[in-house]
Amino acid sequence: MPDPEKLKQHKRLQFLGERLHEPNLWHLNRRSVALAFAIGLFVAWVPTPGQMAIAAVGAFYFRGNLPISVALVWITNPLTMPPMFYFAYIVGLFLLGKDLPDANFQFSIDNVVSSIGDIGGPFLFGCLILGLISSSAGYFGMSLLWRYVVTRRWNKRKNR
Image (cartoon, rainbow, N blue to C red; front, side, top):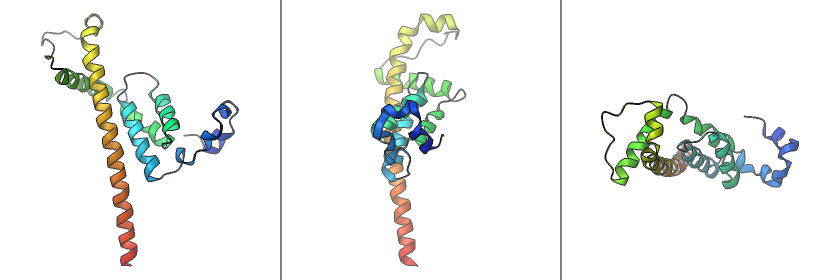
């Protein structure tokens, strides 16, 4: 990640104004980290190129930690993307009450393109649901973990 001070002084980013100087974009605190987890985990399920840019815009808009939200989208990488997105498709089929595709389906570019209308709806719905679940779990999980660690440190300090 580039240095925040260099980004703040970059000519092409001056249009962002004072929002670029928002401390939560760069500092680690419970709120900014929890928001970064919510943003990054949601965007990880968005099946589109440019996930890092979407996460950066989300962090900028919601004032979450920018480096963490951008880094979390790499959960979906070329190795994890096929099983994650297949799982999203299965979840979408299940939630929409549709049957699994024919077991004789041959995976090829032609077959996928010809059945994109049947695949697209359940796949996108599954991605949306899993994105919402992941982002909620990330937000509340990180908030609880942060609170637990801080409380534990306070108790240790008090006991000393």
